[in-house]
Image: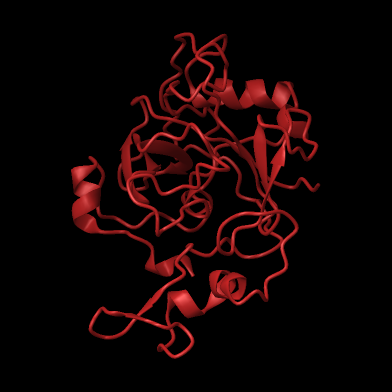
Length: 259
């Protein structure tokens, strides 16, 4: 039920973005063949309102986000989860080798609903996964980049060049969290992490600590101006685009893995 998600035009403008709609197809994607075992996640909305905007009990409210989908099933205790997470989210913490862990430190999150595996950022300033590192958007494969590769920034990001291609290749070479399928996510995949009821930082920091309330690159080129690529703004869940040369944050995703 992500269709009602926080895509306000004035917020996009304020974030330096634009009001165009991000593509839902594979145009400009680093991977056009991602398969999901299930649809992407619900929004995290677990409340209902009436026509006047007042809170009402979801069981007697008209059909809306708060009384449909996985979030409602979780609230009525009819949703089976493999792992844990708020509302309808179902996440498992993984070690650097890709095995489930309950240790205080974890490297990745496996989404048991979608099958996607997400990188978790580190607070260690010397780590290649450090939360403060930014990367230019770069992909020299014209079948994926909209005929505009972006910028191959060669600055040092803790031992890896500060561009998205170099970072993807580094994680795949180390089989990080048990996967060599790492890539930039699509806009919709990034939106599947958004907990819409959170304010200022629309992600669950109990599972995704060290997240900035800022722009994170997607793998999708902005079709009307191919020197630009789409991002998701984790302050409010809005989307926009900016030039590929710009430094932005990155959270990689892998698909096709199972626990």
